[in-house]
Image (cartoon, rainbow, N blue to C red; front, side, top):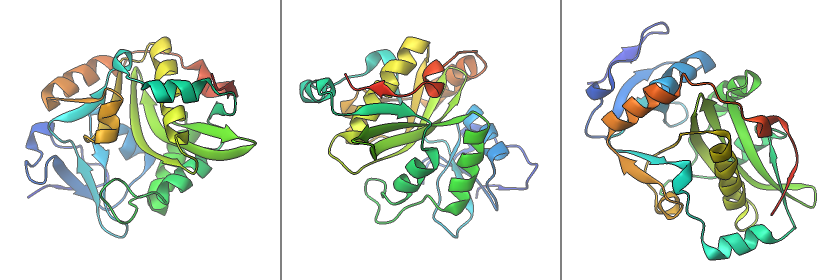
Length: 233
């Protein structure tokens, strides 16, 4: 059994998460930006079906990408050199998360991003914690991703594309910008072959939690989140 969290109840220790399903830690009735912030600071994230209780997860192992370990294929590097796109940040956060809501996660038939999720992350965005990286072509939003930034950690959430490679372009240039600014860790949550190709790898939850505790309270400035646009290169 997992605990049911009242609105003011703290999260249980990560080691109490279930082994099956891997990482299920707690459940709650509601989701708001304050609870989200508490969760991310502790290495916990929400994932649940619309209309069902909010489920909180901390899987073991945890998939992460260290920015300096980013891998970019030759074909994608060639694609990045084409001057036909711009990477922008935070100019269309609501549109990005809405587009992600219409894009199922790998292996799923539906979406988990409902209005409750959209509202909570939009509140985080308004408070400077949630950000979008966007690929624009000919004045149109064609791909991107959103996530949460706390200290020297960026927590990736979801991505979408309407044009081939558009989300990859936003992801790679975001990771490169994060690395240059001093980000120490990108949380990818769960393993996928797609993220593995970019250099993401699983680490033990204990190591993830230790590194998280060292990085979330560090100050780092990400000026690109307020500077637009960035020409593709």
